[in-house]
Length: 126
Image (cartoon, rainbow, N blue to C red; front, top):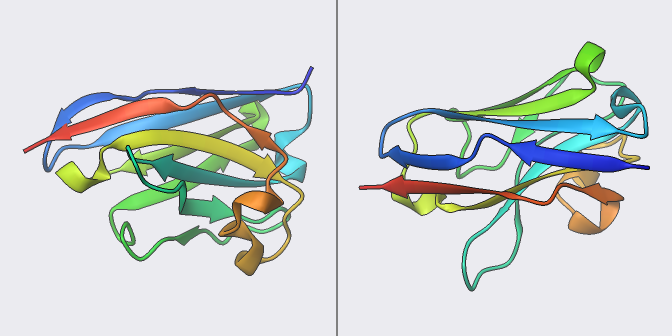
């Protein structure tokens, strides 16, 4: 059974760090592109960061560039999102996702992802 499980969300003060984890099972995560998205109340789900399959380069949305880093551990079939300098506007439910994605442009599109985690809440207080 294919499954992605998000973990690591919580409450943090503005300026603090938080690390999210996503564990995959039922498929070889390293063969897929991986991404993190987030969704705040009343807003669309938006791209945060991603890694295409068969590539080491990572990409982040402008809003989080320089603060958030995505990285994967293929041995653990997992992908992580390291978040620093968190702001109240980063408050959202964060989702990891996997898809057969080879190109940077496709990382930004929700429709390109086949598998999704259940989401983990991140709350940043001012």
